[in-house]
Image 1 (tube, each protein chain N blue to C red):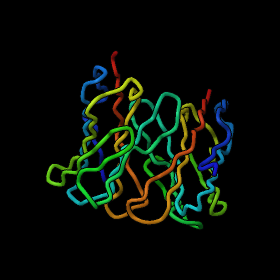
Image 2 (image 1 turned 120 degrees about the vertical axis):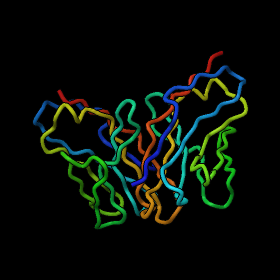
Image 3 (image 1 turned 180 degrees about the horizontal axis):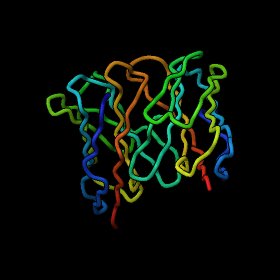
Image 4 (image 1 turned 30 degrees about the vertical axis):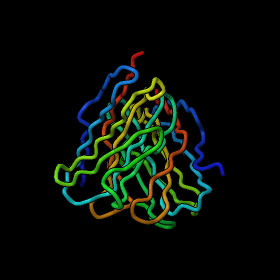
Length: 114
Length: 113
C-alpha cells in the first residue's frame, strides 16, 4: 500500500508571507497526486492535481505544487498567504496499482496571522 | 447539479443501535467511497465501490457494511454502533479513469454514546 506523510501537522505564517506545506509519498512509481483544502466544519475542496502533463501544477487561489519523482514529494506552495487560506490541507495519493483507491495524509493545519 | 449529497447531517446513537448513512451523486460517476475523519488522522477509507455491482474493503472496514444500490447511491450501515465509531463520515464519488479527482459530500457527524 502507499503511504503519505505530511511533515508538519501545524504551520503558522503571517499574512503576505509565503506558504510551504510538505508532502512525501512512499513509492517512486508515479501515482495520481492531489491537494485538498478543508475549511472548519466544511467538506473537502480540490486545490490541484498532478496529471503527469507537467511537474509544476497550478491550482485555485494562487496555490501551486511541484511533483519531484526523485524525492517522492509533492509540496504545496503559495507566494503570499491570505487570511482566508487558514484551513486544513490534505495531500492525497492513489494506490500503486489501483487508480480508484486513495490514501490521505494526516493533514496540515495552516494558521495565518494578521 | 447537487453533486454529492449525504443524509443525515448529524446523528446521535446509543451503543448497540444500528443506522444507515445515505449517499447519492448526480454526476454519473462510476466510483463511490466512504471515509471517516478523526482528529489528527486525515481521512481513512472504509469501503469503496469502483463500479456499480462491486464493493471493496478499505483500511478500516470492521464494524461497517455497504451497499451500492445503483450507480447513484452508496449506503454505509453500522449494525451495532460502538463509541469508537464516533466520527465524521464523508462520502465521495469519482469518474472512471486515471488522474480523476474525488468529489466529496458535506459529511455526517455521528456521535455514539
